[in-house]
Each structure stands twice: as structure tokens, then as C-alpha cells.
Image (tube, rainbow over all chains, first blue to last red; front, side, top):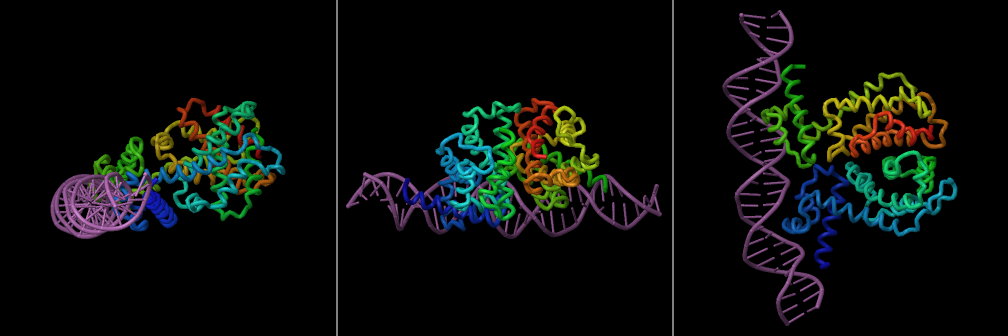
Length: 187
Length: 187
DNA sequence: ACTGATACCGTACAAGATGTTCGGTATCGG
DNA sequence: CCGATACCGAACATCTTGTACGGTATCAGT
């Protein structure tokens, strides 16, 4: 990809991220993004059709990257016992989040975090499905597999959101214990 | 309240609900709402400052009503056993939802359901807190009470969302069993 | 039935956002 | 070095927003 394109694209993403930290998504105008990114008007529209597409592309880059990284990890490394969860995928995800790559935390904690949490959950479901469905663990339950996959994904996202909303007081290890305390009884 | 005011307010709510079934929230303009409700421009702005306030008021009426109704029920009627859940607050809520009062289901199943699910969850937390915190059941857990209240509320909302997204194939009784299968091990 | 209050209408308006077009300039990859 | 192209900046018609106004119809209370 052309270096100019990359620079412009990143400038837009950065400006958008900064604005999302200050204003609600609905209140942000394309004009503000253009001003904050310091680019020409036509340039923005040559990159993104609308504000919504910009959001979509940003989320796909962010969560696609995080989930794909976790997808590369070996499967089935999930332990129900509380102490030995060092190789839990969820702990790995939390540590990755804590690095705050591309300010992903500020987005997940912003006023409009629902949008990002939804994208997060959508991508996470794929991961949960491959992690658990393959092992067959979920089939032992009396609950529908699809229901459980959805519940586990949503609960993790909700746990992260709870964590961020209260200032990330817990360590990733503690939070993983909380989360496993919730879903371990199910599988 | 003046009869004229009530009629206008309802007309706006109805128009807004109809539009939300057809378009995404961001795409809906005040002008569209005005046209759909068939009212004067100034009239809309004398009722609601912005589109966001309209959404807020609509949600407060809808979920405030549902939760307040459930709040009136006797507390602590929650049973962990699977069969005897006839008086569960959650079953009561599901049945109330199924009546589809003011098209609340079409809103919870619309493209922008996150917004409504958030309002739903916010109100539900109050209910969960009074239902469980008083009984002291949650304190027996090794997990923080606030974390559990949040998890239970979020899980119920997520269960309802899952139910709607797949066409409400299950009965309220079946769905209550699913839900209790998820949270019963925790309390 | 009468009356003052007020909610509504219709129109108009300024300010700003949106999405597109165009020619000129600077930077890119090869 | 050169052709391709990404950027700029300005201009543009169109739409949305929020407010203001006087006139009309409906309301609640006596």
C-alpha cells in the first residue's frame, strides 16, 4: 500500500480515536474528523464512504488483530481449576488488552463503548467456538451449544467492560479468576 | 397532562418506533420523525430537545414500566431448582415482554438493539440488586457482589437478545431454564 | 357556555454538515 | 527520471438542524 495512503489512513484513525475519547459517536461530524486529522475534505471521502464505514474498518482492524493473535494459540488450553490458569486464552487476551495497542482501551471505555463491545463480542465468538466446540466440552451440557458460546463470549466482554468501568483495579490474573468463577461451573 | 400533549407525544413515540424498525438510528433524521408523526417542526422541538433525548425518554418509559412492575413482586422468589421456577422474577419478565407492549420487542430486535439492551440492563440491575442483595445470597460467593449483580443482569439481557435474534423459538419457561442453568450454580 | 391559557401549525430563516467536482501540486514506486 | 496517483483547497448544491413568529384550534376550569 502506498505510503501516503497509510499515513492518511492512520491519521484518520488516530483523529477518530481521539474524538471518541472526548465526544459521543453521534455528535462527531466528518468535518471534525477532517480538521482533527488535518487532511483535505476530498481525501477523507476517498478513504471512507461514511462515518459508519470508518467505524467498521477501525473495529475490524482492532479486534480482528487481537482475536487473530489469540487464534494462533494452541486450542483447548483452558483449565477449570482456579490456580492453574496461566495459559488460559482469556488471560492472554486480557494481557494483550492491557498493552493498550492503538488505544483500544480508551475506545472500550468511552461513552459509546457498546459499539466496540459488540464488535469485540462478534469476533470473540469465533474464537470461543474454535476453542471449545472442537474439544466437545460444551456438548456435555444440557444447554444448546450456540447458547453457551454466546453466553461465554458475552460474559467475557461484559467482564472486561466491568473492569474498565471501575478503573482496572484488578490484575488480569484476578479478573481471569472472576471470569472462570462464572463459566467454569458450566463446562 | 394536556390531552393534546399526550397525543403528540405518543405520535412521536410511535413514529420513532416504526422508523427504528426500518432504519438504523444514526440514519434517522428529526425531519423523518416529524413527517412520520405528521406534526409541525416546532412541535417536535417543544417536546424533545434532540433525537437522543427522545430515545432516552422512550427507553425510560418502556423499561422503567417493565422493571417497576417486576419490582412490585415479592422478593426472593428465586429458586435454584430447575422445575419449580414458576414464580421466578425472570419468568415473569419474559412473559411480560412477550405481550409486546408498545412494540418493545421490535425495538429489542432492531438493528440498533444495543442501545435498548443497555437501557434494559441499567434498569434491570436495580431489580437484581433488590432481589438478591437483600437476601444476602450473593455474599456467600467468593466473587464481588457488584460483579455478580452486573453479570446476572447482563446475562439475562443477553439471553433475551439471543432469544429474539433467533425468532423466539423457545417458550418463556424453557428460556428461564436456560438462564437458570447459567446463573443457578453461582448463588 | 364562556374565557384565558396553551399546544399546535405553517412558514421562514441562519448556520452548519454532507457529499461531490475540479484543476493544480507533491509524492510515490519502478 | 517518469508516469501514476494520492493529496490539497476551493467551490458547489443539497440537506439537516434548531429557532422564531403570528395565527388558529383545543384545552381545563369556572
